[in-house]
Amino acid sequence: MASCPNCGFDLSSDGTCSVCGYGKQSGGKTAVSVKSSRRTPIIVGAVALCALIAAGGVFFGVRAGRLKAASLASAQAGGTVASASSQSAAGAPESTASESAASSTNSVSASTKTPGNTPAPSSTDRSGPASATSNTKPVSYDPTRYEKNPLYHVAVGASPVSLRASKPIDLYSPAHQPAFDITKRTEFPPLTSETAYVDWMLAHTNQSKHMLEWRWQRAQIIVNIHLITHRRVLMAFLMTPREWFVRKYNLNKTYANTAIPIGFGQTISGPELVAHMTDSLDPQPNQRILEIGTGSGYQSAVLSELSNYVYTIEIVKPLAEETNSIYLSHTKAEPQYANIHRRLADGYYGWAKYAPFDKIIVTTGIDHIPPELLKELKPGGIMLIPIGPPTGQVVLKVKKTVDKNGDVHLTREDIYRGGHREIFVPFTATGGGTHNIGGSSSSK
Image 1: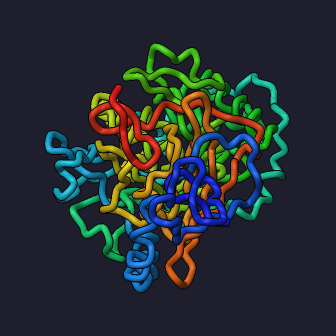
Image 2: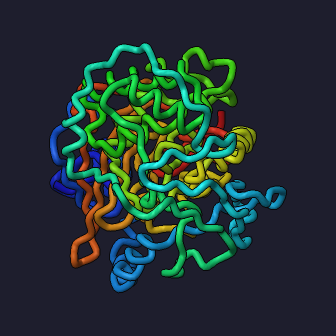
Image 3: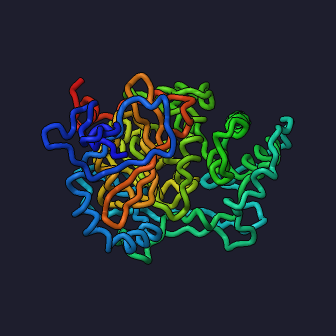
């Protein structure tokens, strides 16, 4: 069944759409078909595929011969964190005006870790004073559930942690490496009990015992209700200090399962939602991930534990600057943050400079799929996007495939299987207002 390229609803037999009127003047003709993996009863709003109508045949015909090379480049390329005109440190955000400037970062340094040995305490890396044994009672994790999961492997006995200095470099050069290669890590906290996890983290980081206990307890809930199914994602959740990204005036709500205001009319999504979306996306170390809506910075921080190539866009300038300062203040202790490329721009149009992306995650609510984001998603790639009206969105997992004729097909799935809706902040447009169906924006 073909779907309307404007709103995503099924077209009638004559190729016209009864919802938005598409095709009534042109005789009803579309080249984009959409397959749904299941019927989702509560999907409200619309999924738009408008940009691929005119460009589909020509665009994908031209790009077909380049996809193999682009895929290889995507797996190996990373790029340095872009520098704004007023900032030169690693991790400085890239503005629209400075997109053509050469990227540069400072060298990242950290103590070398030898497998099986605890690194010497330091105030600047993942080390700190050893803690006394915690009196916290062990909780009901079943460690074998994750330890035997073939999707996650700890490289026991591998080479020490590898840190590479960044310098201006061709992003697409096969020789390019991330600023910090997460695949070289050899030490991880144990998941056998809260006591073991907290003690390990206190010995290797400067994080607080109270927050670590709270994080573990929230993770237990998330696992027990099956919102995390990959051990890698569980580890990323447990390694990422959410308290760094929740603004100081709301620290007492850090691991409460609710969206929390962070100023500028924006929020940080609840920990269970972030965990479930990350688990559904399942980022891999050499995949290129695009996030739309940097916000607090927490989602990208979690992603940086899972991928060496994270790209994130924020449209609210003071928020982008505030979040960037958080990244910069913690990059020495958490060198994977140097792999987060930041940009100040309207995320509706994606980031063509670094496309195509293996995965895209949108963290703002909208009533359709932005056409440019769909273009920038690789064939076989996955996008997570909240679709629906302001009263609540369905988080869709959209898989893109392209057939031999260059026609695009989408498989859509509600990650909550019709059982839940979330309210996200609106997808803000340049100059104010929000992006509506068809790519237009309305003023506030």
